[in-house]
Length: 488
Image 1 (tube, rainbow, N blue to C red):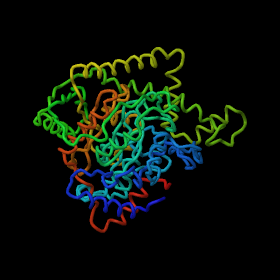
Image 2: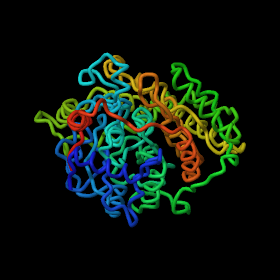
Image 3: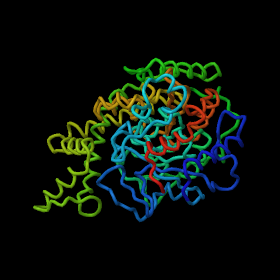
Image 4: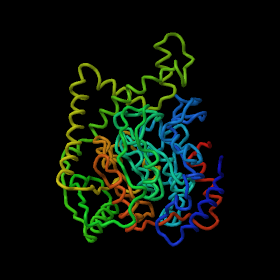
């Protein structure tokens, strides 16, 4: 089944009428049994049976998996309907969703009245980015093209675009969701992510997807959870930590103001709010760069032009074929990470780089454990330094620099394997979403979402409204084409 953009809008409008009067849109409310008919989108690094999965790379052009990723199959088993696969950066390496083979993803908020009133640029020539690497999934949910979307999160790739596109983005505890069928980037940090319009819906999807999978040895047994998040929750029982190291250089005034506002909101409601220290998280960017490149070098070794994927016509020698195949289709970001990883893994460099990075990763994880041992229930942090950058500004800096800037608040969570969720809180002075991140303890995803739902209900984030009543055609054209959703 494939729904046109107009049909998706009509379906969403009908649902909005059914849930009128509530600031929180819980898209599963009208459905009593199963999730039949729920439209969902899937990031194009998840395998889907008989559907091309190029992972935004020329290397996998024409690759059609013979199976479904576990998390995809679980949704299909519930009767959910695939709307399409969504765009990303090549092999999910980046934080902007700007340099995949299908082109850049455009933030739907670029087409809202408030943003267009603030901006002098034509959104068809310069627009706000979605963030990444799950930019297409975030855009699908934000534009109301999909009720939920699957992303992946290795260093913030679900939470980053969730914040910039104004949607809820959950990165579960490492091992709670199966990675079977997810094309790997960094095996020790990759986690399937969930993107929805509300925390309630993220929790519902989590219950469906969590649990052991014999095809993924890193999965764990899901803890027992109630059927739904509690409607009434006493926030006075919660202690919220504010990491002092997260007052990072470059943090925008808008983001800082929202961080302070929400922290005050918790405190005024009776929660305990206290400053905490995560001293080693300041090294997470460098640590992540080393570990990511090392695992990328290993994972990308399988793409040699022999088994599947692109194969160069150069056949003067096997080595020449290998080299030319990879050079022809890998972009500069992928090639650079492969080269860096091989350098870090050289015998002469192994102890100096890889081992030290692993040691630092352990210290980062211990920082979180030490904080939670003091009685902290959740940590409240920014998700990104600011609202979404304009595309023309974003591409002025290289991928490595931008990733370091955009992932500074999110990467430590992946190092420690903790659950985290981004909740949209307000619009910036430019009319673009700002999200804040809540971080929980290992396997306490349900408690994290309970706090997140309380926060969501208090901040009252606005619905997206496109510029003018006549922009139905503009949405159908711009959001459909610019998010490059690949039809199912």
